[in-house]
Image (cartoon, rainbow, N blue to C red; front, side, top):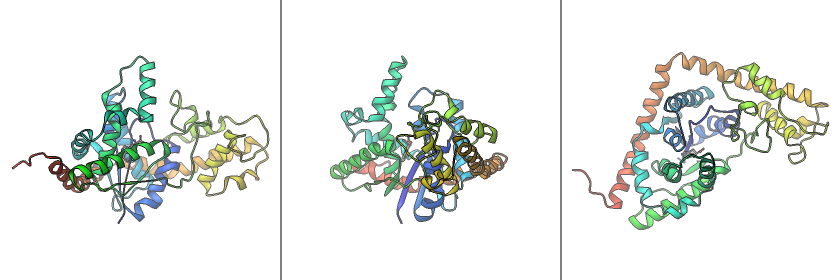
Length: 332
Ligand code: TRP
């Protein structure tokens, strides 16, 4: 069976963009068709300035929300990355396989490094080596497919390069994974800046709907979404990005088609109102399930404990093989 791996970084609250762009597909498609591993990749949250208590809280919350969204521990393996030592063990071997030049070329490193420096902050070494840890996440499980967005494709390419290089030098050890660009329900944009992905502009949350936002907060954010200077409701991503974004969200929530939906609206106001209600209804069961799970922390802990055990059992033999292949003396 095809094995797939994907991860969520607990650096912020999960958004409607995360849900419609990735998580919903994990729930509805991936966990049924493949042997799927989903990880809250907490080690990746330490590459930039972080608050320890916040990372811990967001990690638990992300795992709880993934369950609330419908990941089923009988159908997939859900775990927290730092619970499985194999990631860090393998990451070091891959650091000994990667070259500094190829890491310095990573777009995300360049962008985030530039931002940090501009803010007068130091750049952590782990920001540079982060794609190597991501490669370890993927390669430790013999992953065949990695469903990720555009922004992560370069990291998966690097993962492939490292797997091929390691295999050539030290003998066949790793499955060489493929990126799959999943057909997503919607690439949801920021409601205040519809040219950028929701969740990418972090200054203030006005344009971001979080999965745990109260219904009234969701309504307010959607009703205040920026629209365009025209007056007609048409689905035109270039000329009317704000309206197109609302239509995409509405379509994703109701299962409709954005162009067809556009024809049903004479005003921006009516479109916003319906979109707001559609989002509230989409999130309602998720919020309810989340509240139930929060009331039963033992259940979530149990799922994560079992998930980590299963993940460990899969990763351990692969990483042990890599240790031997690269020349490390087995412990007696
Ligand atoms: N780097 C990914 C992100 O920022 C998260 C991630 C970490 C990941 N390890 C992974 C995604 C392995 C897919 C596979 O979104």
